[in-house]
Image 1 (cartoon, one colour):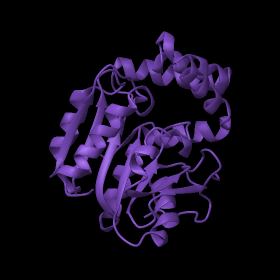
Image 2 (cartoon, rainbow, N blue to C red):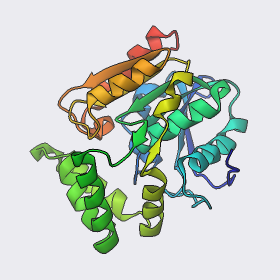
Image 3 (cartoon, rainbow, N blue to C red):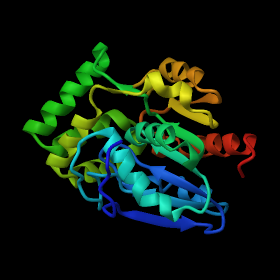
Image 4 (cartoon, rainbow, N blue to C red):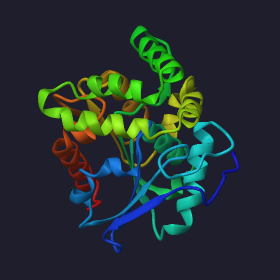
Length: 262
């Protein structure tokens, strides 16, 4: 097991300190503030622990560029802060780290929720190859602001979404190019699909109908888990937590209620 670098993650706490803890893990190039539309919905009942992942936001870089190292660094940072099992919610990159955390530390996790995430990131089909190569080449040669301009249009194409496009560009531009490329290194080629059968806790895989990863791939992953479920968010893209926050919040709330966690 990877030995983590401890004490290097930026964490914010909010909500009900006496409630069940929810660990929030953001996506690639984002930070803990991306949960701003979920926090008001969850804070009355739950104790929210939002982490800036390694290489992101106000957190430090770590020695090893791998999903295992990122997961273990999160675990070493938050495990002593928890009085009981937590709910883990991860978006995109945060979702695959949430899978890893649940697999390696099942005694920590009461329930698992991913939003537009994946159990593998292999450049094994034309759409993913094109997106991966475009991202790598633009970031490497033109920088993160240029990538932000492209990505913002992909995520939020609507006329009324200009404010969301500006936020994405701002967040990506604030990243270190070296740290961003190290995260790509950790992600590309990684897979834990073959381990999903070991996840026994309730697990909800939320998928936008227009996410990069097809809904059917999430359905296949859910079937591998003992208590895996899929909820589809309509008229949404990869950043459902921003473009359809009410639908995402409702899916989270219903899942937790149906599993006696409310």
